[in-house]
Amino acid sequence: MFIRGLAGGGLVDGAVPVSDTSYFHGWLLRPAYTFGGGVERSISEQLAVRVNGDYMRTTFFDAAGTTQAQNNLRLTVSFVFRLKQHPRRYSEQVR
Image 1 (cartoon, rainbow, N blue to C red):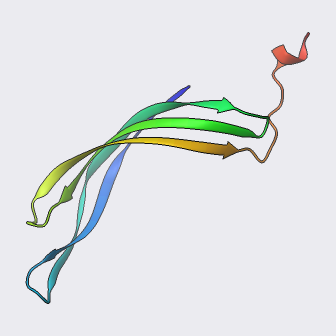
Image 2 (cartoon, rainbow, N blue to C red; image 1 turned 45 degrees about the vertical axis):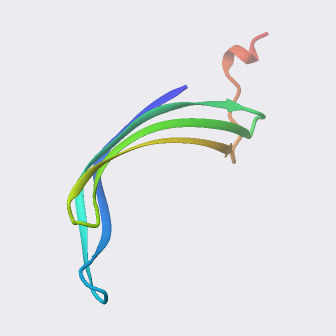
C-alpha cells in the first residue's frame, strides 16, 4: 500500500471565441494539488498490478473567460514491469 501527495501550479492553455474569425488565447496559472493512494500486487518477480485512486483540485477558465474550480477523481489500473529483479528479503532466505 502507498499514499502520495503533490502540490504545485496548474497551467491551463485555452482559447475563447471573440468573433466568428478570431479567438482570445491565454494561459492561466493557479495553485493545484493532488493526493491519493493505492496498492500494488506482484504477479511474478518482474510483473505487478497497481491500482491508484487520486483526487485533484485546480482552476481553469470557461468560455466566458471566468475562472472556475475543477475537482477530479481519477482511478487507474497499471501493469508494472520491473527490468531488474528485486533481491530476496532476509526473512525469506532464512528457513
